[in-house]
Amino acid sequence: MADKVAVKLDGIVKRFGGFVAVYEMNLEIREGEFVTFLGPSGCGKTTTLRMVAGLLDPSNGDILVHDKRVNDLPIHKRNLGLVFQNYALFPHKSIFDNVAFGLKYRDVSKEELKKRVTDALELVQLPHTADRYPAQLSGGQQQRVALARAIVIQPEVLLLDEPLSALDANLRENMRVELKRIQDQLGITTIFVTHDQAEALAMSDRIVVMSDGRVEQVGSPQEVYTSPSSLFVAQFLGNSNILSGRLDSKNGALSVYVDGLDSIQVDPKQLKDFRDGDSVALVIRAEKLTLGEAKQDEDHATQLTGHVDAVDYQGQAARYFVTAGGHSLQAFNQIDQQPVKEGTDVHIRIRARDCVLLEPEA
Image 1 (cartoon, rainbow, N blue to C red):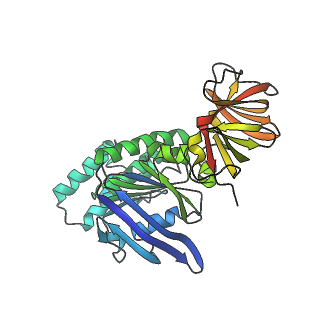
Image 2 (image 1 turned 120 degrees about the horizontal axis):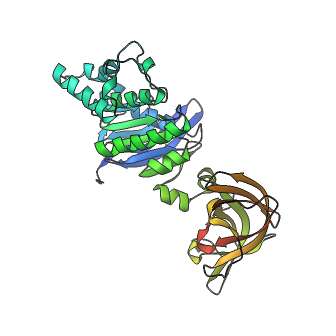
């Protein structure tokens, strides 16, 4: 991937009256990169996308596309491709005319227009639909047409605002793969907005996790998932067990004392800026907490005894709700044939390397 910066957000702020929707956001997106803005409703992700698109003006800061400041450029002069949740297709126009719409306002010959529309429909695997109308297509096909219309103008940046959220679960997964395939094939810089963590983890080169108008963390999917920088990120991405405890560091070993559970061993690399005796939040992903028989301690693992209160069977895996030492925990484990039964007493194993230390909530 090239190091050239395609989009730069330099101190972007957006206010609506006295309400601050986006706080001084700084971000560089590289050429050809797929970057996802991820967060709950109202976190500022769509507002940020709309500022890049030119649908909203920033209150402060600069937006640069390929080193060109675009704050004062209207949307039709930014050469950006837009795909929205509701597709926004013209019901009275054919699929060909829907896709060609953006080209009719550009200096493109009829021959070139026809070729680019045909190529765009080929790319989204809908070459046979040119003479049809939106109402004759499925939701997934309409979404592909919207994508073809966005890319036919050969935009500098592709902006996608929750484009898959109106689709059913299976179609959504298929479109996720198709969308990433097309983006890879074109090598186009893409900004994708979603509240769906699975989409973000599966598709992104980098994820920008947002909360209350602020950037919580920026990193690769693996970085934000395995090494969350805040409790918000740990809780929003995946299922995490979060325990309050006190740090105990002796003889090169590191552990966290948790009331009711005694000490849980932690990788010494997690010490970071903490000191002996500090209060900490101990984060353990649900899939890293395993249930089964007691084993020899070969991985610096803490072994606890718990009780299975409930089982959420999911086919190849099960989510267990377990009580241990007065604490409610979740374990998400793959299963061979039968899940552990509700009401069973179990051993819980926690490897030191699977524990993450964060600052406790204020």
